[in-house]
Image (tube, rainbow over all chains, first blue to last red; front, side, top):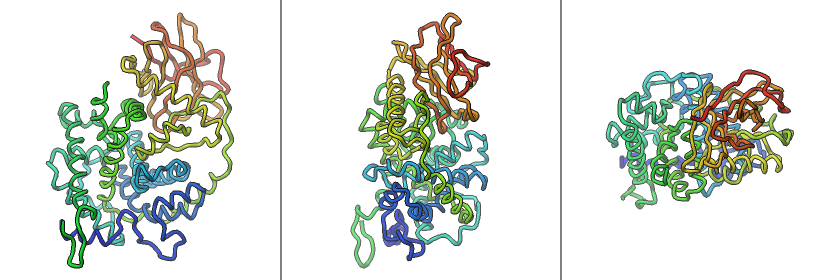
Amino acid sequence: MGFITVLALTLPFSNPQTMRLRREHAHLSDEAVVALVARSNDSALAELYDRHGRVAYGLALRVVRDKALAEDAVQDAFLDVWRSAARFRPERSKASTWILTLVHRRAVDLVRREERRRGEPLASAPEPIGDATDEAAWLGLERARVREALRQLPDQQREALELAYFGGFTQAELAERLGEPLGTIKSRMFNGLARLREILSDGMPERGTWNTTGFTS
Amino acid sequence: MEHNGFHELTAAYALNALDGAEASEYEAHLGRCEQCQEELASLQDTVTSLAYLPEAPAPPRSLRSRILKEARAERAPVVALRPRWTFPALAGATALAASVAIALGIWAGSLSSSLADERQARAEQERAFAVLAERDAARIPLEGADGILVVSRTGDAALIVSNLDPAPSGKAYEAWVIENGRPLPAALFDAGDGRTVVALDRPVPGEAVVAVTLEDDEGADQPSGRPVFTATPA
């Protein structure tokens, strides 16, 4: 964890500057780019896609498990961004959270509609859906950070979070599937998320100090 | 449900693990609860960290160009819909829904851009939310569609429907309140994105049935065909 934290600090993973540096908006924060999108600036939309499209597609693909449907979910979500950017409130939410939440909602709507839920989504043993070797380094590091945090949760909490998020199951469906009372599922989701939040924030820069020899908390 | 009941739904909502009707009720609560808005914004960040877990190949390059092409095509001015139209929930921009949606990080696609449309959509939603937020409102499951009819003690009513198919071109859904065999038009609407919330224009008395038919998009005086779905209060 320590090692990952050190590396993650050097990489602005929430605002990945991973693409071509000559891009027009490359120096802007996500939130500033969204403000340009709100003014119907299509190169700003392209910039947001270049920053988050890959994660968006990976997420959609995991949920819908079908390439064409995943593309649909990503396309719909980025068009949602295009249409509603003027209403985005940066003081309330990170732009990346907003965009990926839209992608997740679109993807889950699709699986629920198409009854396409297949297989078990397991973050601890991810299926190699495809070759990820060409992805940016920051993405691999962020993944390792989240995976490590998730590993620290009790199995049942982790399972509830993964089935809900990647399987697209409602809490009622989960209760039925796992043969547990609804209240149990609710607390697993709530406690699991609260704990995950705690673990993830422990590794954030503002909680420790950064010096030339590395990160100490 | 009191605050605690809703509060514990925040995690499930952030995970998008509520069904359509539950999510609408939660959103109605959220619009009024600062504490839940803050908790949700924070949990939504945590939930979104999960998005970085899947390992996947890059999306095809064609996806990027398709999105940009669509976006440019949409930049053309949106033609205002007829005033009688009632808007799908979460489609029009309302002050309440905007703050809610941003707190959640959600936004369903919006077509409307004119101020008049937005005002009407806001009025619609506020009426629907007011009914939803009533603690002792009756919740009646729909027959023929996934959703509920919510009826307040005073008879104010709203429909919440999940995954309703969009009405065919030139058509619209029309809701009817049927009392003593006499149908009265109660709302004209199209499907929302994922979830449709419609406030009914007239109260639903105890003995009345609510039915929804497909009609010409100008609206009809009488239902012309079989109901697409119905709700029968017990």
